[in-house]
Length: 397
Ligand SMILES: *Cc1c(COP(=O)(O)O)cnc(C)c1O
Image (cartoon, rainbow, N blue to C red; front, side, top):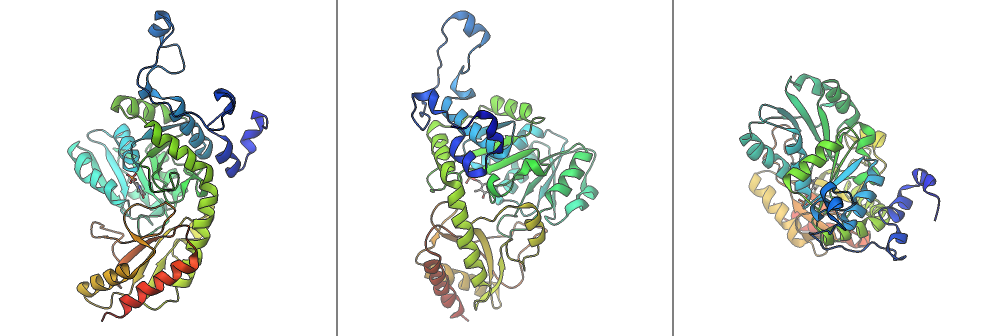
């Protein structure tokens, strides 16, 4: 293998293939072992008294969880990564780490709904003030910053409606006012967008999605820059959060193929999104890589690629009852797309999204928003499925 000094020059797929394990540590076996553990033994009382060994107790890390965290750090360019039990926990743990009673949080209005629910329930009960802001606000966020603003939370593209945020502009303003910036980067993964390189302090991923990649794992990852790593690690330790060995192993395994999987998700989704633009019954296709999408220029400036998740606006044709009937007709006619939550696995999924909680990035007026996850099936088969769905929707008047 190449000398260690060359690793910093490695490309993404080389990093995905060769980080997070050192076969020499495990008799040459390519993959690290899955360590199931609580107790770690010390050789003598002096070592125990000083905790002077690499592993001390499994909540603080095992060779399996460290292998995953090391691989993620190499991808993110982060100082440290914590592993938590779900993508949602990867959102709530850093918020709890950085906010206390009397603090103010700026939260993007197009955020993943359970993040919003956490803000409106637990953070509110803890005495934390939350203001939702327009995903397209950019540097205009300065007008919303207060003396007690501690965190600016971003998610780009926006959940379900895919708005692209100007992350560097928002980060500059936040830092000027000594607030830290968190980003839920689940859509792009650090392969297509590296938050820490754009001024974000804390990068969040639902590893449940592309890193896992097979709809069989729940896991969350939170990566911090050098300045913010001690506080994040402290919160993880105080809260008793720790990565589960089997899930951590599955995600590490998923990372090995994430580059090639994403490339296929990207090309299939883009091909389908482009073709859908001309289809009867489709009012709008919300995909950042389409030149007609409002956030396209920002996406092109900052992102290295697009993933398999996008939405479209179905022609609703009038009353809300008709919207609903048409959306159900579309979904019920699908034979390959599954109806289900989550995404990032190998299979295609469709869901009618609800935007009723939004106050700024609200529902388009023309019809319901349907979100598609384009899996690894043949695009021609998926297109035929979409045509089938649209024909069913169009037949309802
Ligand atoms: C799915 C998702 C999450 C939550 O992940 P879970 O593992 O399902 O809890 C968080 N953020 C975004 C953007 C997601 O898509």
